Length: 224
Image (cartoon, rainbow, N blue to C red; front, side):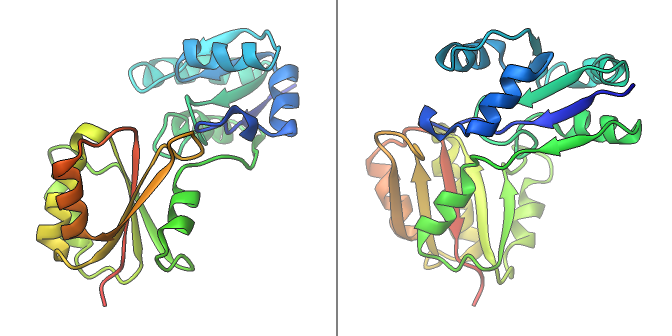
């Protein structure tokens, strides 16, 4: 009898954002497939749960996906989590979901935390239509992706790390124009949550004077 795979979003900051349903699934699963077993282990400990943890991250997912799929086919119920947020959204997970579906294993994704939704809503930019770009390529294809966004009419949503944020803002201002409205959000749901709004030029100036801290969601207004 085939098992099942449940994709479980985890808090992006505030641990109170875990849902009751997510806690139940984590307690019932035969094992938890985790991006970083240390991070997920601390979450399980906080919830008072003890489950076997299986490491599954960008460095090993191609090697392990078949082994995990075999466990699902043999009847295991696996819960897939990432370090924070919803697996598959700029996090490992897509390969396992695809492999499970290919062999007929039921896949369920619970609703839950993801960083870009609160950042988009709090940006003040139009959010009835938007395009999610996640992390841009660091080398090959980066400029092509940026140029493709030049005439995008919808709000653009990107992820970026703090040490790479100034470069991203410089490139966005160069390609999209320095007066394009934008918002840089950090530390979503945490104590120091902040949403810095203004033009791309104003965000450039702010983060040139003040070093970025925390992981960022950058929302940019679409082309007029």
